[in-house]
Amino acid sequence: MDSLDTVELTVAVETEFDIKILDDEAAQMLKVQDVIDVIMQRLSEKWN
Image (cartoon, rainbow, N blue to C red; front, side, top):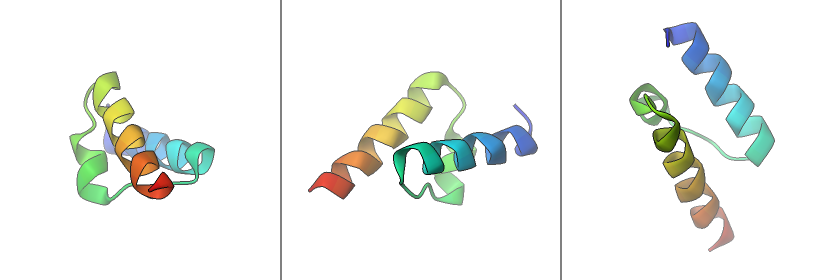
């Protein structure tokens, strides 16, 4: 995935789940599980 793909994915996830993903987190999202983990972490923080 190139940097433009990363930005597009990050924006889509932030919009869909109403969360904020930090730039360094986005750079570490290399696998689908990485994306899921970040989403789950942010939603958990949002709900608590």
